[in-house]
Image 1 (tube, rainbow, N blue to C red):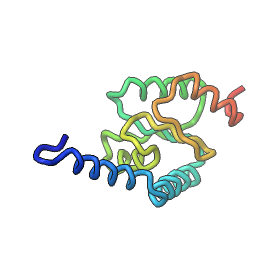
Image 2 (cartoon, one colour):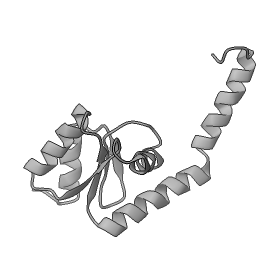
Image 3 (tube, rainbow, N blue to C red):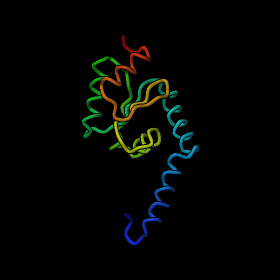
Length: 123
């Protein structure tokens, strides 16, 4: 709770934040950013940080499967962090963006492998 504010004010603030996050313009903006990055690069993007265990696991998996990907370090470049949040809507990593424009946040190895098979990037 925000100090000095009545609970109903906190709810109003929260509702305003939620409305902005899930507004159609925010969704459209995320979609445009994602499409722009995927179409410009034509391959998988992984937004992550070297201190993140899930990020390292995902990078290792893609490398071991022979999948080309661009790794965008969110801890070294604040604009990449902002892009990852713009795409996913949450401040969590890794964010994996696939060539079809879809994305996963903190995916398991099984989820990544299933997606790669559906895109016919692996057998």
